[in-house]
Length: 121
Image 1 (cartoon, helix red, strand yellow):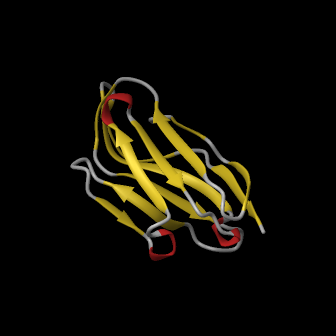
Image 2: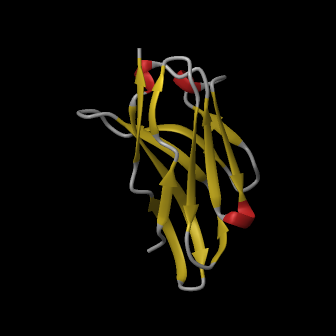
């Protein structure tokens, strides 16, 4: 399996900003989609944003115009810049990499361990 390491979560006041990072370790040849999901207790995990290998992006409606996803292929890293944060953005955020090609083979669906984002009102 491919290990994804997330960082950047924390506690912030409403209106503030945070930047999440997620990096894949090991010898990575290519990654297709890279995305961020979030989950609150008692609810299903939901898509926040995704960026394709070609650079196309897609955002969920609640975060459009506030969050920006980007990727650095050379570093096998995806970022999520979160601005104008709201209390309803509070969740555990997970990164997800699809179709990761490594020296050890192809891994179709890889997840980070999750990072807590808490937005206080």
